Image 1 (cartoon, chains in turn brown, orange):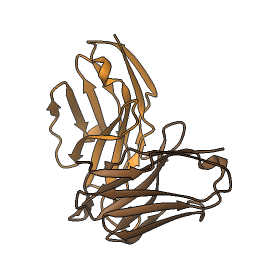
Image 2 (cartoon, chains in turn cyan, yellow):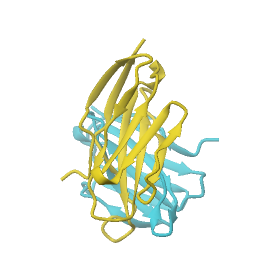
Image 3 (cartoon, chains in turn cyan, orange):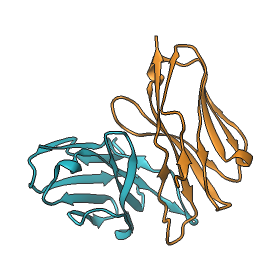
Length: 115
Length: 118
């Protein structure tokens, strides 16, 4: 059974379009994240939600909007896509415990290509 | 300044060689966690290990071993008798105590691409 799943796995779209990526985890974790991995493999955190509350909001264009309908889901909506948005987007989840967040488990990634 | 430095961007070895991937971290916290993740060519990120800052014991899991040295702020990863399937990008990461400015984020190094040739 998949622990952290993302859809779609691949997303090819034109500049200016709006798209969404969905993420679901069945690990019972209370915290979820979005990361962006660029072509040089650098992993950068974008957002984090703990119990549906936004707790990390990195310097990301406001064209990116996360939404967490419940603890098990964290979606990412991107408006007016630009060429520079092309990357692999990873969703992850972890459990907060005694002042720390345990290891993060990652989804398979969504490869976004903007033409 | 980077909190996690993986100075080796690429390493190539031949099968059955031992290889060590270096990781140096920077933090002012006394309590923190260190992690290693593997990203094979298929692209997923696989959790390998978590180490608490209070536990400096080395860890061994099969052909994998980790050497944590607080004195040098290093958390190195050794693969013994490497295999082609070990070819991947390996990331070291740091997590600091939960407070307003950090909130559980993982600080990743830039990764080391390991290629194991048959």
